[in-house]
Length: 407
Ligand code: 7TS
Image (tube, rainbow, N blue to C red; front, side, top):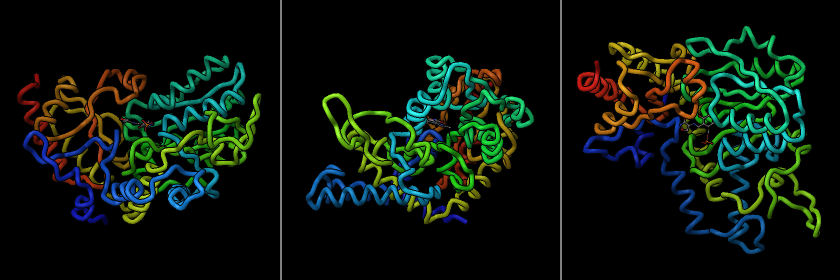
């Protein structure tokens, strides 16, 4: 069980008022709020040992380097990566996926090859593969979803033929909330000889993720969705794959030796970390990992599941409210819906006037919305600091929205 009162006290932003109402923050799937230990860890670096990493011989720089590399160790153990060299710091999930599309994809994808995605992918796990496929003459194929937002696993075997070189799949949909059977997908994809990238942007913040248990080849996630700062994300990759890949970005830190005409590369993980890294943010992410670990990922998942089930029960009792996606036991803390034909932006605006922050739009998943016959939805998303009272406030506010704007 999580001690919600204690947790909420760690997040200064949650005690704010918005438009005269206590803030109800229901947009953590876009980005989460930050607890004091993360803010303090970053402030400490700026105040006490701020100097560029990996180069200074002086104590300040060594302290910052140590703290940054120590954060990498903590992230590695958080996802159970066997070795720290497999944890590459990127800017976010998007950059991590682009890194693989560029460095792995441009070496390994050939004309006629196939890349298997699913119909529920975020644009971040879609557009990089479109660019790669267009450049290489490869083809994208999609594992379809059912009308209630589950993957059509019955079709996986027939799509996984020898032309599929890569499978890129989300571990949890940011729109439907669906938790996908990635472990089974990975096993089948490996059986067919394909490499698998898992988009874990919505998974790592909310549930235990173990890359060795999954046996994924690549896994991408963002610090800012898991109580960490913006500007820092992670690409986990199996060492042998990372070793064989050419660099992504060229510049300082990623080289071993530079001649006028050529260069050789630094060891992992720095081969993929060109230029001054976001090391203060990396240290912040390390503090976020400690914070989440202190509460326990199982406890966080259980709390969000309970809250999601309650929210779905209460929301679906509102006449004219339609939730998209699967039942509560198959999803994480994301609930997207339409309501009595009212435009999602109007709903979000009226909720904002009552201090309730939700997201409205296509949530960077336009093809998925089109597949469901929708252009936009309202999305409430939950995290470890949300409460049943906040769900009640959402429901009451929606009742008023219905009275004012409903047909
Ligand atoms: N993949 C998934 C499943 C996501 O939900 C997101 C962000 C990304 C990738 C990209 O992450 P980024 O940190 O690189 O931007 N999702 C959302 C969202 O649902 N609302 O805003 C961002």
